[in-house]
Image (tube, rainbow, N blue to C red; front, side, top):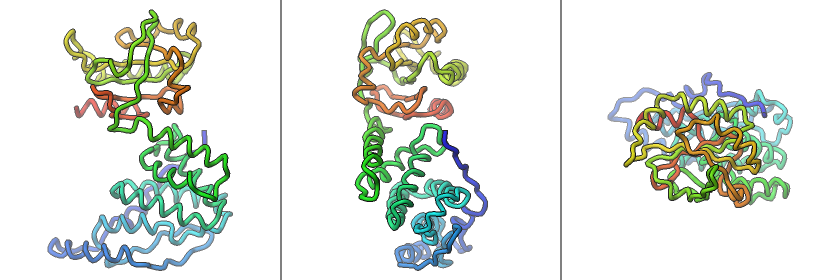
Length: 327
C-alpha cells in the first residue's frame, strides 16, 4: 500500500476561515463585496522550493467567501515547473492533503471548480501534471485511502481522460476508472445482477424484498473479510435492525456475494458464516465480466434502500452503523 500522508491542521484552516470581526449589519454587504474580489485577477508571487499559502485579501471577511477564495488560489504561489518538488512529499504531497481537506468546507460546485483549476495550473509541466493526477488517484480512489471520495474524483477524471499531456496507458487507466465511478452512484438505482445460493437456486437482486440491503463482496480466504463479518455480527445497531425482521416485514437483509469461481472453498467455509444472513455466489461471474460493480478490494460494502437505490457505496462499518443510528 502506498504511504498516505495525513492532514496536519496546523494553521491552515485558521487562515482560511477566520475573518475580521464585523457586525451582523455589515455582513451582507461584506459578502457581496468579497464576491466581486474573489473574481478579480490577483497576482501572487511564486515562492521557489517550498509551499506558501496565498494571502486572502483583508476585505474578504465572510467565512464562506474566504474558503472559496482559498480553494481557487491555493496553488497560486506553487512552482509547477519545479519537478524537484515531486521528490519532496513533505512539501508537495502534504500541501495536497491539506488542499483536499479544505474542499470539504465549500459547496461541491466550488470544489469541482477548484479541482479543474488546479489541473489547469499543473498543465505547465507534463511531469508535474502526471504527478498531480497520481495524487488525486491515490487519495480519492484507492481503497485504503481515508480521503477516498469518488464524487470529487469525477471532475478530475473528466479532465485527465482528455489530456494530451498523459501517456496512452495512463489515459486508458483513467478511462476505466471513470467508467467505474459513474456506476452505482449514491442516490441512483444500482445495477442488477443474479445471485445463486448453495442449493443452486438463482434470484434477481432487484427482486429481493427488503427495506434495506447490505451487500458484502467477500472471499473465504480473506482475513479482512473474516474480521468485517465479525464486526458486523457484533454490531448492536445492525442486530437491532435485523431484530425488526418478521414474517411480514424485512427491515434489513445482509447478503454476502462471492464473486470468484472456486465454489468448493466457498461451500466449505459457509458453516462459519452467520446463519441469519443470505450467502450467495456469482454463478457466471457476470459482475466481473460485465464490470457491474467496482470491487477494488475485498471486502467491499454497499447499502441499498427498498428500491435498490444506492445509499452508501464502497462504505465502512462505521458509516453503516451511523446510517441506522439516525434512521
